[in-house]
Image 1 (tube, one colour):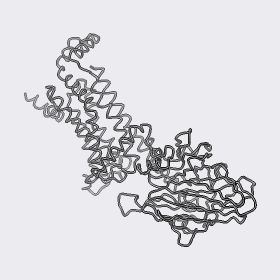
Image 2 (spheres, rainbow, N blue to C red; image 1 turned 60 degrees about the vertical axis):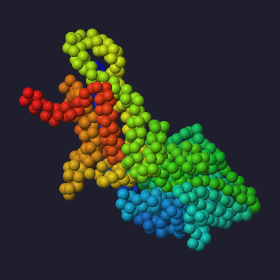
Image 3 (cartoon, one colour; image 1 turned 90 degrees about the vertical axis):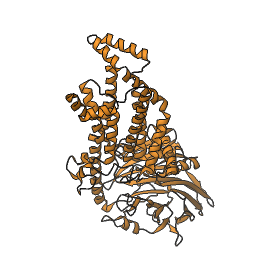
Image 4 (cartoon, rainbow, N blue to C red; image 1 turned 135 degrees about the vertical axis):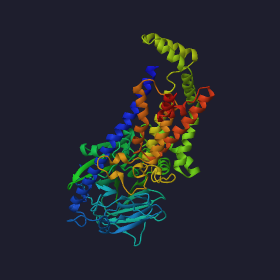
Length: 613
C-alpha cells in the first residue's frame, strides 16, 4: 500500500512541479521577454526614420534587390512616420467590407492597410480595432505583395514596390465590387491586377499580362508576406507565433522569429500549399494555385537596422507571346483565425492542411474535437462558460464506467482499512510478508489498488486540451461568463488582497511579489473544491504525506490564479462533480463518508473533541 501511496504522491508532485515551474519561472520569464520585446520595438521604431522599401524577391538572397524591384526610400525618409502619415503618403483604393476596413496602396499595389472591425484591443467595445497590416515607412510594417519578376538581364520592366498603378476614380474593394489596377511598362506589356474579397478574410488576386509588343517575355509570378521588426509575442511554448506554412511533403513548417533570426533562409519546393506569418489570433498568408509547383522560402534580413522577416513563393515561369495574354492567380488570407472560417477555406478551396494555421498542437486529435463540442454547445446555450460546464458533465458521463470502477475500488479500500492496519502491525518487521498479505487481501476482495490513479490520468489530457483551446482559439477571446468574468481566456481579474475591488489598491503593483498577490475569486473557489475533494478520503498515516496533501490545494490555488479563468472554472466544477460522484458511490458500497469528520479534524474541532473526551 505504501508503494501505491508513493505513486499517487509522485503523480501529484509531478503535476505540481510542471505547473509550478511555469508559474514561478515561465510567467516571470515571459514577462521579461515581453518587456524586452517592447523595448526592442521602441528602439526599432526610432531606427526606421530612413527605412528602405526594399523587398527581397522570391529566390533572391535576403537584403538584395532583385531584377525588376527597384530599391527606393520610404516616403518621408529622414524621420519616422506615424501610421496615418505612412498611409497618406501614397494614393490608395479603399477596402470596405462587413469585417474589414483599410486600403490597397496604388504605389506597389500592396495590401498594407487592414483593420479588423469586429475585434478590439480590449474587452471595451469602444477600444481601437485590431490593426493587422501596416505600410512600410510607418511603425511595424506588415504587408502582402503579389507581382511578377523576370530573369536577371532580361531587360523586361516589371512592376515593383514603387510602381504607381492606375485605378478607376472612386474604386472601392467590397464583397460585391472588385478592384482592378493597371500599369503599362512602356515596352508593349500591360499589367492588370484584380482584387476580389469574400465576406470574411480571403482575398483573390488575379494577375494578367497582355503583350502588345513585338517580342515575347518570360515572367515569374510571385507573392510574399513581409514583416519589419520583431512583434510582441506571448512567449509561451504551447503557442507558435512567427513564420508558418504547409508545403507538400515538407509538411507543416513553424519557425519562430528568434529561430529565424539565427537561421539561414529555408527553401522548399512543393505543389500548392500555403505560407505566411501568424500571430496568436490573426494571420496573413499567401496561397498559390494548388495545382502549380512553387519554390518557397522563409528568410530574415537586417535592413537599415531593422530585422525583416519574409515568407514568399516563386511560381513556374510563363511566357507571353506578342498578341497574347498570360494570367496567374493566388489568394491572400488576412484576418482572424476563426475555426469555422479557416476550416471552411481548407475545404472549399482544397488548401492543403490550411486548418493547421490554428495551433492545435501535438494533441490535435483531442484539442480540436474538444473545441468543436464546446463551440456546438455554445451555439445552443449562448455562453462559452456554460458550454464548458456542460462539456465537463458530458466528459464525466463518458468516463463514468471507468470512474465508477475506480471510486468503487477506492470505497472497498476504505472498507478493508482495519484489516490493512492489522496486517501492517502483524508484519511490521517483515515488509515482504506484509506486501504478500496485503496482495492476498486485495485479491480476495477483488480490489485494484491503483484504480485511484485513473480519474487523475483521465483528467490530465483533458485539462491540457482545454488549456490549449482557451489559449489559442479566438472564439474564447473576450468571451464572457457571468459576473466579473468578462474574458474566459484571461485570468480572473479580481484579487482577495484588495477584497475583490472594495479597496482602491492594485496588489499587482507591488514590486517582486505583485504577481503572486493576484489571487482571484474563482481560483479560491477551485482551491476550496480541491481541498474538499481531498478531505473526502482519510488522511494518509505518514506525516510527510499528510503535509504534502494539506499543502497541495494551496499551491494549486496560487498556481492556477494565473491561468485562464475558463480553465479554473472547469477545474472547480470538475472537482465538485467528482466529490458528488465519489460520495454517491461510497454510500452505495456501504462505506462511511468521512468528509465532515475530516474537515472538522482539519479545522481543529476533532482534536478539541478528542481532548475533551
